[in-house]
Every structure is written in structure tokens, then in C-alpha cells.
Length: 550
Image (cartoon, rainbow, N blue to C red; front, top):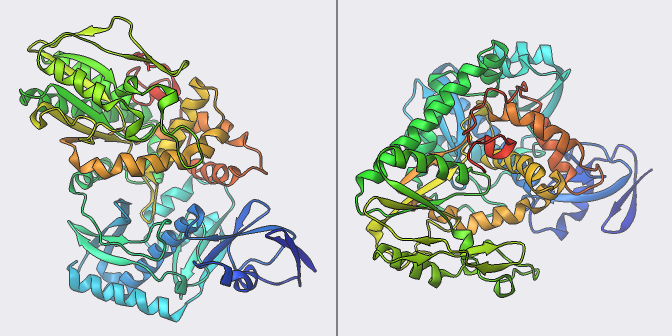
């Protein structure tokens, strides 16, 4: 017999019992389907056999559950698309990037991608869901996998596994339709009940629920500016044959890394110069408002933008909105009673508006300085008065929210949204979440500058993400310009800094699952040295060595 501890109680199960059988016994306790189990801190799919230990059930309300749901929905969509269109008519189907509550999918071949076709694919997906077809998993040698992917014309996967050091690969299939996926799958197609397909630009959106609402499909909200930025980055990668990790590893293996760094950094500098020119063309613009999520490189970007503004004759002055924090004792608190520095109310909005309005009127203003150690606002004689060529470069998470700058005329503000929008995919069907890039960046920076462990960074990341969802992402489309700070080569560099930090996380900790996942992800990349990275690169903000004092 096997002893399993569930909710503090020990149950005996015969050897050979599956987790699915156990999950079915406890499903009545859960509003949402049980998709995976966590046994002794490790995730397992439901077809696995029971083992001794402490059990936790995973649903789509948990991050691993929702990513499993999304992954499984992608596999079902691909099978349905191939079934409807025919493999002989398909050149390529690529899951490019996430957009809102879904994935943007590009499909090319001998067919017309329209609402009629998508409805047929959607109906075919619904058929598979109704049939509850098992999602099978088999393990093959890496060499056999490479041969299999070549035979299926999945050359991106062939390239990927050329550099894998693991001896075996897991292949998933639905009724003979095979593919490789980075992560776990649900037991059968019947679990994927909620989805939609919506035509969008030159592809379509596979719309899925969120972990906050796992049984609700909300109407897709177009994000045209963000889409344009992501598409531009994707197209750039395509032109350089740098769409996937395998392609990047090819470049590294062929000794082309130094050249790639130069091209990528030149591209970013060109974009920054273009944004500076846009600002200069708006003669009434006196306030450059920069916002973006954690670890997007806002500080380095604001410095490099200031250099470009100065190069075309303007006089930029950096201002950190953080200096307008209310005194710590007056800060709002979250539901746990902790100080909440993510909400707009943690800032002295009225003081900020009074200062900015006075500067716009040509008055001389003393700007505050926030002493984070003491948690109080101070004044240190930092006076400023704007002339005809002066411009303020203001950085803060709320800068796109007009409530922060409610007294300033609209024409006086130029808004910029910055984020690390990863343009690289693991392969054509396995995207790299943008949040993973930012999490790894932050982990490396926090360990270097704040003495925080990777475990600490992972532990607080959900609250950081919650603040971003509430205070930054809703205002993305308000921006006059968007800047993608992701560097196509950065994971190959960050790997050497992040892996030792992740290996230090104890196996019995809550954060170990995430650490294990990130280690597996980084293992896809060939590591490279940071010596060729310019001193003003955004990546230097995280790994150190910046000439911009960030």
C-alpha cells in the first residue's frame, strides 16, 4: 500500500493507483478541474502512479495549472487546424507571442485565413473536447526525436534538440498527432472547455481564460500598439533567422555572438533615437512620461533617451516619481496589512501636479528627495526652472495614468511604454513568456545590488505581477511610443548569473518548483560571456558594469 497525505489526513492506496483516480475522489471539493498534482514538492501529471508523500491538487487557478491549460489548448488547436486544412496545405503555424488573454498565432500556407476557416477549426476543437481523447506521452531518445522532427518538417525543433544534453525527450500526442511541449499536459482533451479563436491582423488569437477566471472567456480586446511593437520585433528576428532558441544557439556555435550583440544594440539605439526625434517634433511636449513593468530597463532607457534628446539640442532633466512617495507612516496598506508601494495613492499626487504645473509656467521649483532608509520626504536644494529647450524625463510605474498628472495639459505630455517583450520562442509552438525574462533579470539584479536571494525574488514576484496588472498594463495603449527592451541574446548571457542563484533554492521550499522550471528553461541555451556587451546596454542594468550609474 502507498500512504498519501491529503489536507492533513493520511490515506492508503493500492500500488498502481493513478493520481487521476485520487483526484476524482476529491474533485467535489474543487470548483475547477484538478489538472495536476504536487507530490512532495514536485508536479506530476494525472496518469502517473501514486507514491508516498504529501499531496496538493493543482487547478487552473494555480500558475502551473493555467500554463498546463494553455499548453494543452495550443496542442488541441494545432491538431484541429491540421485536420481542417490538411498538412499538405500548411507551410507553418507559429504561436508568436501572448497578447491580452490569448496567444497570437500566425498561420501560412495554401488556404485563406478568415472567420469561416477559424469557425471550422473551433468546431473541430469542440469535437475533440467532447470526445475526451487521451493526451498521450511517450519518452524517446534525443537522437530519435531529432529524426522524428525532421520527418515531420518541424525543423525548429530539430535545431533545438541538436543542442540538448539530455538523453531523452517527452513527446505528446492526440490520436496520432505528435508534438513536443516544454511542460506538462492535461489528462485528456475534455479538460479544455473554454477557448475562442478570433481573427486579428495577419493571424488569429487563441483566446483563453485567466487563472483568476478559469471558466470565463472574455471578449478579446485589441491592443494594436502593443501588437505593432511585438510584430516589429518578431519580423526583425525572422529577417535575421533568429526566431527560436535553436537559431540563436546556431549563431553562438558559429562564433557570431559579438556581431549579433552589435546588431541588436544598434537596433535599440536606432529606436531610441527615433523616439527622441518624435519628442522633439512635438514642440509643446515638456514632460516625457515613461512607464513599464518591473525589470523592463526603465532607468537605463531614460538615461539613453536623455542622451539622444541632448544630441538634438534639448536639455533633459531626469525625475523619478518615487521621490514623491508619501511618508512611510502615511502609506496605504494591502489586505495583509503590509505597505503597498504599487498603488497610485502611495504618491503625493497633488504635490507632484503643483510642482509640474509651476515648472510648466516657468517658475523656479525645489524638487523633493525621498529618503528610503528613513521613509520620509526631504529637500536638499534641488532647484529647477525650465527654459525653452528644457524637458523633463519622468520615470515611474504610474506615468501613463493621467490621474498622476491630471493638472498638466495633454499636449505637454509625451508618453512612453517600455517592456521586455521577448521576441524569441523556444520553438514554433513553445513561446517564452515575457514575464520569465523580467523575472530572471530581476533575480540577477536583486542578488547583485540588494542582497536578495533568488528565493526572495520568486516569493515576492506574484505581488509584483499583481501590481503590474492593476497599475501598468491597463494603460499600455495610452502610450505615444512603445519600446521593446528585450535583447535576443540576453538569456544566453543571464544563464551564467541566474543558474547558481536558482540552484541555491532549497528543494523543500515553495519556490523550488519555479526554480526547477527556470533551470530547465535556461538549459536550452548555450551560455556566453558578457565581455562584449556595451557599457550602456540595458542588460548592464541587471548584470552590472553600466556606465550610466544604474
